[in-house]
Length: 119
Image (cartoon, rainbow, N blue to C red; front, side):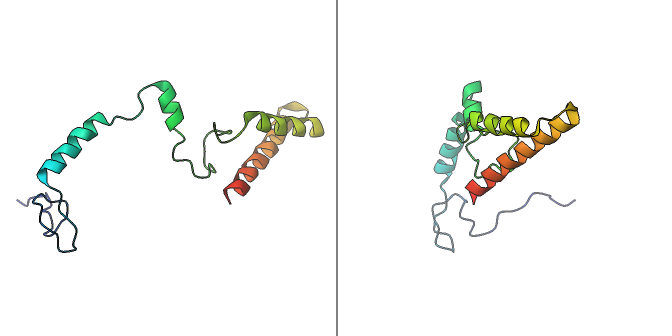
């Protein structure tokens, strides 16, 4: 029967021992590994609903694939609403299909503005 566990490579800088690895990096000591694991147990991330909402956008770089239409803290919801209202006033859509199309036009403009800001 073959052992499926991988053996660490010699010279792996994450092995305990405190010696220099072949590439010049210091190996992590077993005490440091244990301390890192203890610290990781305390690092749980945001716990409250408000903290989760706030941290949700920490990694936003450009927002082009964001699920939210307006990115909180980065964009003004009133500005988006104004764009939608301008299109509704200009086109005066009748019926659900026309309203949907006008809203799609406004959303496309909003995303294009976001794209131009990201560039």
